[in-house]
Image 1: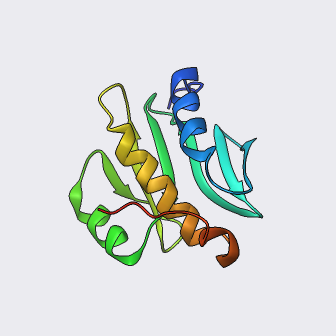
Image 2: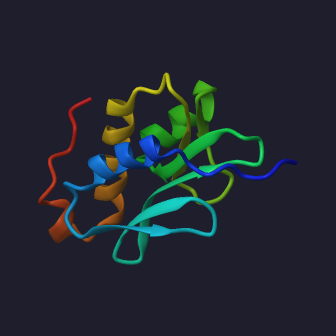
Image 3: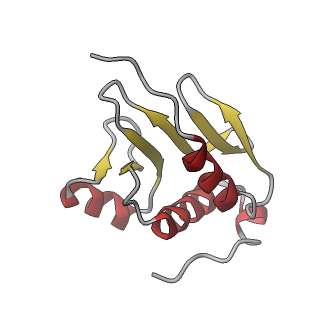
Length: 123
């Protein structure tokens, strides 16, 4: 396996813009890559894999978890956590979709009084 690449600044900046509107959401370095949290709960984790590809993991509702288990690339269901889903990222990624997924993940993970302050995307 190869070394994990650093996440490009433009990807980080795109996620920063998506999370900036989420109450009490903060960015921090993770064991690899960067994660965004509310309280002690991670809402998104952006990192480069040993395969040289970039991915984001998030929390999904049961319908998303079921769908991501079967959709195939760029979507995937993580092997850890019952509601952890992910997406491979590159220049062709629909970043509006990623922002929606981050918002949904936030609302799953955040305390209710914070999640209630966020407008969920209509899909």
